[in-house]
Image (cartoon, rainbow, N blue to C red; front, side, top):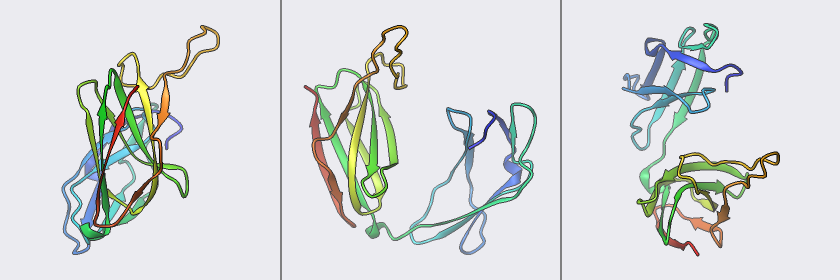
Length: 181
């Protein structure tokens, strides 16, 4: 991430090619915290993608741009090498953030926001392993999780965990449900 807020992206300085050196169409944006460049494209299974971010691709708040070339290699597997997880929620009164956490390294691997009306989330293309599901309840429906404030004596918005770890397997669609009490 960037130490100063990012402001501009120059897409002509970003190149993505597949394993056959064919250019891949992409979209770019800056994340909500304004500290990361996000690049989105439609990956095909069993492929590899070379992502190159050339100097001048990103400019920060002070007008400084990246000076180095950044490269990354992304490999995709066959669809059958991944699993999926579908969770249905009932009695949901607020929007929620649903986070999928890998139990091996405690890292968030997928995250999504569901507003009050949406009751189902589908995480696809998940590496087979065991996951915890953390649910952050957006009680004021402002689409962000609000931490507490000791000075104003405001409590943090509620956090709950799915009652058990979930074992996602390759080529398997796991369906679970969660009821808010």
